[in-house]
Amino acid sequence: MEATYWTDLDTPLGRLLLTADADGALTSLSMPGQKGGRTVQDGWRHDPGPFRAADEQLTAYLAGELKEFHLPLRTHGTEFRERVWAALDAVPYGGTTTYGEIAARIGAPRAAVRAVGGAIGANPLLIVRPCHRVIGADGSMTGYAGGLERKVWLLKLEGALPV
Image 1 (spheres, rainbow, N blue to C red):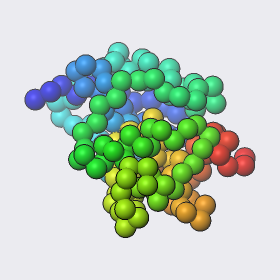
Image 2 (image 1 turned 90 degrees about the vertical axis):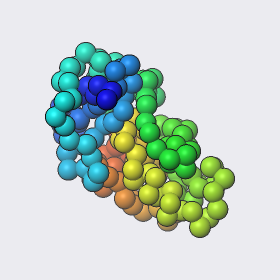
Image 3 (image 1 turned 120 degrees about the vertical axis):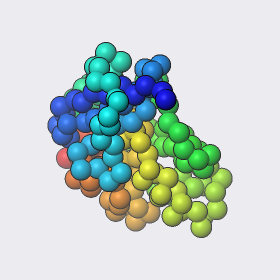
């Protein structure tokens, strides 16, 4: 069994739980009360060492001083989820997209919008992989595992919504 390292960070969004693998790649970022979020498991190793870069970059991002993360990431999902997550990575800071646009970007049919939503909802790397930038086709704030109030906060931080 591969080692899992964890730490937590106090942020304006609450205490974030970060996990990494033995190589130091970030494997998850969860928020308090997050739907499907991770919790510390027996056997995990508490060690802030592998998270120094993530801590620095998240702190700078949440202060409005960083627009793009440069961290090693490692997630495990179906081929479809990995394609959706890669499309999320391409949505720029301060921008938004829709579920339909993500489906089109990965070459999925329009009927796959629900599946795209499911893959986005299963994103294990909130904030770093910007699922908060996905909104409804009508501009509405829809689904965010970390809570809609946090989604709005993040979009305001990035200037995608008026403050």
